[in-house]
Image 1: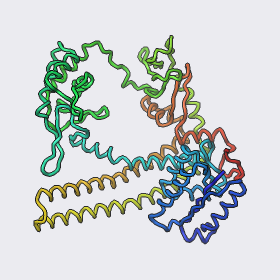
Image 2: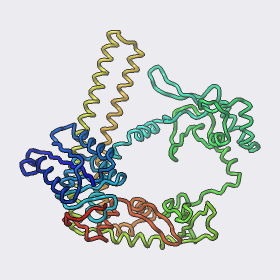
Image 3: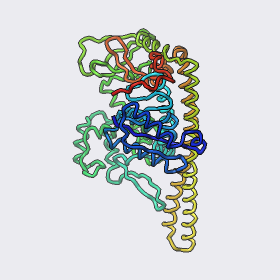
Image 4: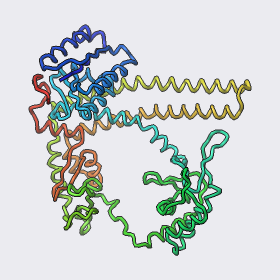
Length: 502
């Protein structure tokens, strides 16, 4: 089996203490020879390389991805393999998706796709924290859109009946389409009478020449008319991901007309969804193992909760009901096992401390970059102003460029602010993992139904109802805690001669 060697040092002191690059490489070569690995390539670098560290690490990852016969990465220890905060996430993706086996020679263990035990829990916990933090910093567009929605600005293309505009200063807006808006109003007015079907309205709109807002300029289909009639945007509210926000654009209809249309819709004998807001623990979390349909909950006699398959695919001849209390029992049994020893808890906290240092290093590298970029746009603002004063550019060009640079600076300030929010979530997540690893069952039992649901959603995945039995998997890193409980032969300090999977 072919392997790649990764050697790193971070300080001169480490080199003096026997961790120099040649010393690391020699030890890793001896380990490879002992295990029968063929060395395909050796990568070594000092972290004094500054900004080039990430590029060098990416070279290692690229080499492994492009050489499919390389299945093993040899490192001195966990800390040496994940010096950069994002490295842990990248390595774990390679382990899961590419089948990479990572050996930590000095630590005396290795991990692969099928690894279990205490080491896996420590590794998964560290990767989980890193992912949480990095994901928190990657939602630029989401936060920008949320801010726009709070300001009453639409974030998608204009609905049928509206057109987009741009004012002289470059600000985007929206106004009623002079060619289509009156026809959209007519759709609401006709349907509100209760005497015309959607098909009939479609035929009327086709005759009047109403078209969609796509390039092919096709007539509206029935589903588009149905969507228009259910869209609160036309009376002043925009709906995004189930949430309603007031928008700042001119409404086409009144709220009264919209409500009248909804009353007509409700007259078509549609059964309301009764349980969408009920505090069922497993609501929308479990699927039938036989047909794949969603398992729904029902309330009996005011407080007894039962679950059953909705049988949408008509697979089951008879509906089977399972008590919620029975479905909770296997969850409780598993939660009893998610309890680390004091030694394991202390090891976990030590790993989190290392993650915290790595996170801080990541932040320290990013913030100066953002500050420098912010100052760059401030300089450009000043330069643009001087050009305008010297009459080198027009007022329109000055306004356009000023707004462009101002928007860039606002985006940078938003990005910098996210580090603060991410820090809070980083430590909150750590505290939650430590608490659950010690008192998972106690916390679950003392929770209200809606809290139990949030708890279950945080811990469980791939939930299925097989007959009357609930089957599920624990999410990372809690699956590692369960393995550590069940597999005591895989504890830290295990014999480094343990053979890897072939």
